[in-house]
Length: 108
Picture 1 (cartoon, one colour):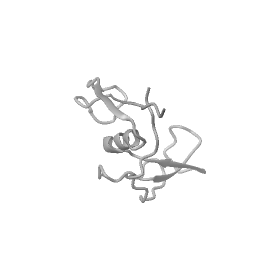
Picture 2 (cartoon, one colour):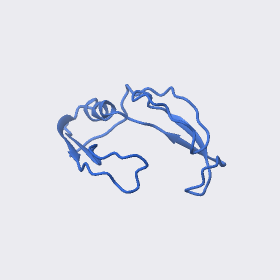
Picture 3 (cartoon, rainbow, N blue to C red):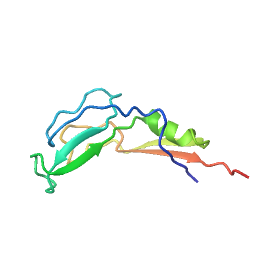
């Protein structure tokens, strides 16, 4: 059984962006929140009336979210490494999915 909570170590101070084509920080450690104004249309690149917030967690953030409440780390598995047709860049060799598992301890 897995358990999950928000990590207390997540950094919430971030930059603000507008529009879908706004440049994102290139730092791995800049987790957000990133604020966007987006259109109701999925592929419309122009800024719209809707607000969107994006958070980019690191593997360490997910680890903390699973272990801080007292769960025991069980497994981490990287699945698939082929490039996918929809990717703008060639991400071949990087995992398509990262599976994280932890076991919740019985509190009795």
